[in-house]
Length: 402
Ligand code: PLP
Image (tube, rainbow, N blue to C red; front, side):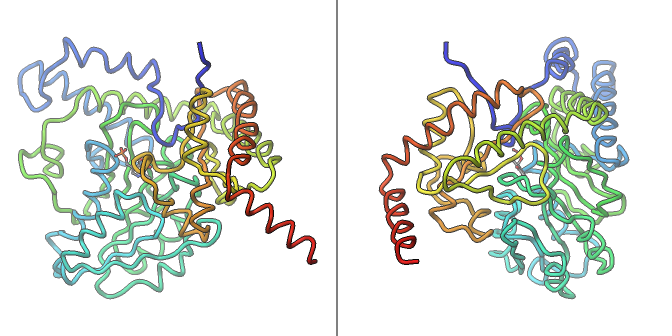
């Protein structure tokens, strides 16, 4: 049987056994609707509220400030559309302005693009070659009509961590709401809403060893947020729809495990594995790390000049190694990553880049396996690549003329 090693934890993470165990009764005997007043409902309501406390603890929030959603995408959409449609603001859609960045996840970017079609104005602040937003660019982009700043905490493709506390201070000073997408940060680095100074923060269970299809939006008490779904008064009228009880229970268990992992300093082990992988891969000719700045401990995004990243992902999968070219939702698409292009890579360099994202289930043996297959696969693909031949020829030419 082929050995399989999973290094694509930014796409999704394996469910922890204790999370599966916590969820199990809620697929069977504990089936009540959490809004029902009889004992079946009370039992599931209590489980949902326990999970809310755990998720709140993970990010230093109050339980009443957690709104459960169907995932990170819905939470991002609720933050962006919910603030722009806020009831208390004198500004309508058409008069509103949002500040976001060029490297956001599509859940934020496409929500903003849709709002632009409705007349809302959006400023997309750039990033530098390390993939970092400059807080002074955010400050400069502010207008009297700015309703929301939405800048992610950690990027899904590079793992680069943004200066969110500085941006939070700018937002507070300007009296503008600040949303941060914490999907790739939660569970990997400490996330404290008070330290960030954000009004809204998105998290998703399946990125921290919880189930897929459940997430949460932190909504600071007093935030003027309109609900996006019309229905019952679930989640304190902020998100209508019967709660996904097994999913929420799993999210709570995953949050508890993440908190225990911080105490055991699991991030250090993951960082050591990532650093070793990165260091040894840098021994390959003509490759570099994209976003070699402050990063979450598990991610490295590497550009292998002269090859096609999709071809490398497929070739590695055939050998048993799962990695990715970037955002999971865009795999299969041939466009170059908007994140890497925004960092100044050429389309060719962006297409030749591959993301390795480790997790707490990975071991030194997994890294050794990756190191046993990546260099030889890169070499073989380069032998077949006309782009690589051209690059080699032009670098020979350069050397002989200097
Ligand atoms: N935001 C970021 C930064 C992500 O990485 C993802 C998922 O890849 C999402 C949002 C969307 O989360 P979900 O998959 O839970 O919808």
